[in-house]
Length: 180
Image (cartoon, rainbow, N blue to C red):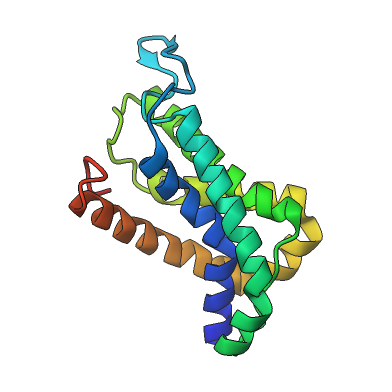
């Protein structure tokens, strides 16, 4: 039972976990905010680009479609009933993840934090909250069936651990300027 809840949580969130990592790898190019400011600070900053966002969403969508294709076989191998992804959820999860990251960047600029500055809590859960919210709006029945309270609990506990871990690895590989 516990293994199935954890497997479901990770499986269902993978399309939301991957986009920000892909955006780091594929980023660069024109910033979304076009250099605009609000007051004395940039709206988002140079780290939020159209290319990174597009690649991130595309990678999350492709992953959701691939997971959907192997859900039954993977579930049989794990002994868990893993969910498939309706198209609306497959689009909503990575799109929400990227929007959450963009919103966090906006909040960082409004609170005087520079690009890459730590923002505890927000840095770890921004993308999850918007990914879940958008998935709930886009595919409510699927969302209710997949994201039960135990699954949501695992997502909220496991995500910060995974987020910090992957950021440390990206930092050690020279892909990020800071380990958070």
